[in-house]
Image 1 (cartoon, rainbow, N blue to C red):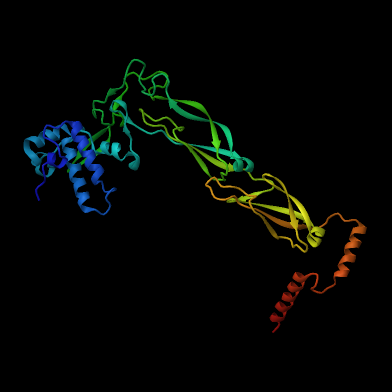
Image 2: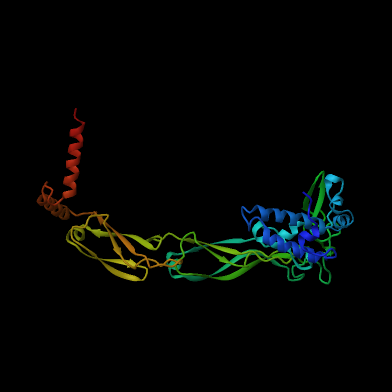
Length: 377
């Protein structure tokens, strides 16, 4: 099947400028790119057709040959085709249109290829109280910033970077290998598209410098261990006018001596006396907002969990306030005197061996007895 005229494919006149050709391809690439039209064979064919047309018409030598000889002048299978790096590569267009998708660089001022700065990570340690209530902390960290002498250009004051003569400012060169054209970063400018003849003495041509940066970071109430806060544009400076990266503050909550957090709930262990467990009473327990009294019913067993509603945490992600779950632990008396031991022995003798006062113990012994009976052949 014969190919359509490349100018017709892009929808431009034969005397169209390079900018008009580039603009036309951008429009078609945005419309027919496979990522935007999954499983659409017609769009995929139109995208490939527009890509082929742009590769020819954006290259001065290839366009001249096409204007003179048509498709035969640029078809490598028919003896045509050119190498070199004169035209703007399709990869450059993708850097403009789909840079966020493919992670490529973009053009900065003066046609120079610009790159986004690196993201940074800062580990912040908080107490449980700070994480629950929110706080503001000052952080200090090393980073790269734009040079204040050359303002990020890398060139000595009063001078500017020059267009690379090898790639003509595109940052990419095309190498002909048989029937294939391979695009790679320009070896002279290392993909930047510009060459600095007189580097800035302050930053040695890098356009950046190292410094310690100080920020006041607001921590919202309800953050938890492992959460992170993104501070846009507070990372390392970009290259050649590219945007700065981001700073990510990772939250690490220190272990608390009383409470453990699980989502929006708080857990704690409350030791109670043998007498309070048997007869009941009240036990003062702490919360993050003050002290409250926990009612202990009579005959409470160790390990019993009491839920105090609304005494937990409200998550930074929203929702209702969690609960405080108190697990009571019956504490066995220690360091008893002779008189105290005698009183306990007397109490124990009144309890007897039946299951009335110790139902769990009675049930356990019955289970043990049945276990051994089942083992007997």
